[in-house]
Image (spheres, rainbow, N blue to C red):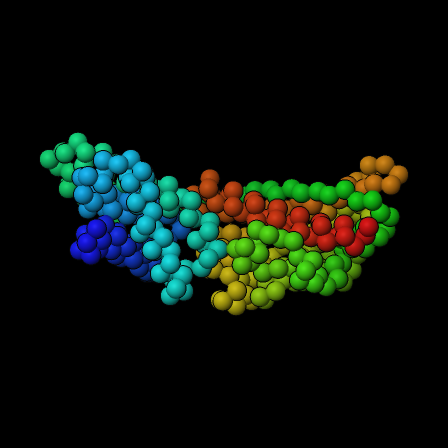
Length: 316
């Protein structure tokens, strides 16, 4: 493939992606275009895939694997360049990459269908596919984001004294880096837990869960039964978190993702074993909660399992 052809097949879809990114990222156009939308996260890579195949030779397009995987090349180029110039963060990319790749392949397959059938209006069809993000985004924003609440539930069995367990539940002393087993949050570059402080064991108590990178969960105890249950509201103030700590699209307490409350419950299984339950509720405000909720749920469970493992290690 010569340089001119490579520019058309890879460079033009990349150029299209950056144009769309900067159009959708204009703050004054939030009522019409948003990065955190189906129109951007699905339709932009869909258009990239369509352009890649449209500009490819008919000989290449006849190959099924080409139509499936060649649209991924500009996607990975877009990933590399946005990371290189700090336009987007690694956490965001890791979460949206599966959708980007699937959408690019879908766009490539549809454009390949038109090209192989040699439709007279092939150029018109592909042009419409490319313009879909701009056409459908205003409709999507008019319909509006959904504000849904979800639950993340985890538990662990502990062979230890009830009083010792509860002491480590209410207050968590400093967690050293080697004790951090949160593989998903670590991979995404999320802040890791440091410690948790509680000023009073009872309703009205103020609990502070401190993470690195400046993230603090401000927690107010709303239900308390000693050595059995503690429920608390959770508030993360995004303005307290340095802009370099988390991507703005996944920042906790931001426009799209927030944590509402948490509950510890201690259940006796037998004379030597207790089960520690940990629930939390979180909110998502996007037009693609059906997808974002999977990731948010995995992240919350990873955070909770990490804390539970630390407790288990300390009480046993």
